[in-house]
Image (tube, rainbow over all chains, first blue to last red; front, side):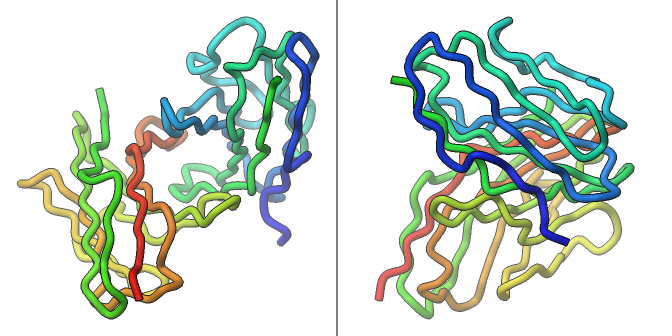
Length: 113
Length: 113
């Protein structure tokens, strides 16, 4: 298996622009997680899905952030409008069932200028 | 509430020396505990995990960790450091039905020649 695939790997955008991050989980995994990594806050969970349904979005920082999972093999995290403080590395991870091991993608490094 | 504390944000060891990275946790329910490693510009890779059963768990690359309930600790060790071990290490705890992860703040390991 190719693992969790995220795109793009790097994104530089101007403040106020819309940004869309993409994730393809491992086939057969029914949980998908979005994490954000910053120097100040470390790794924090933003939202997770089970069987394509959002279960807990309490970590989403503001209404500017939204996430969707239209099918089992694709998810997006959108920021609109983006702000410089959104600059971070965003990770997608997936796991299977009550599986205890989450597999992480390589992340998207977002820079908002 | 669950939390993870990693003592020492930076640890330096000489090549061939013992590696000891400290992790303490707080959890109201029996935790599942993990160590992940992150190499520069990469995603997180699972080193090892504790769920139930044997409290000494062995992982990849010669690492191991011991779950000590009385000390609420899950320290990571390796008998002999290698240059390739230089990376950032994260201790994590899982909670909830989805087993979403709560991460510690990370420890940057430097291996000196």
